[in-house]
Image (cartoon, rainbow, N blue to C red; front, side, top):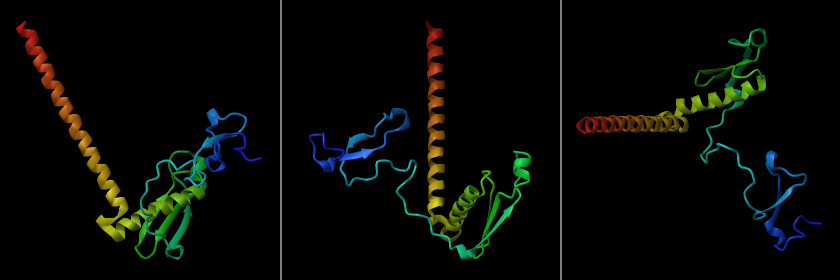
Length: 166
């Protein structure tokens, strides 16, 4: 029996989707959506932008060294810190953000990919453009906050002067 057998709309519009954990009843819910639509869940925080240039594994030198920083013996004795070198450009990235070697390897590759993109593309790099845009937005917020503060000061002075007159 199809999931939409008991419903008055065509089967092409019925689709079974998992509900969020907090709202999940005992059975799966049938939601209205076109059958050929985009997946029900999109990756959060992903932007529609071209990918960074891929890294060739033959151009990489990878080392695992002992960790450092807070965490005591658990991090200082294990070799879960990843040092990744891009041989053609000479860029070296060191990653020890998590206790997992696999996660550190993925993070190191992502960091190296961004740095290689900046190295080869300079100001035309995707990462560079994103950083410049973020800096511009930060400056705009600072400017707006400063203007708001000045307006508040003027308003307070006007209120004080009117209070003294009466």
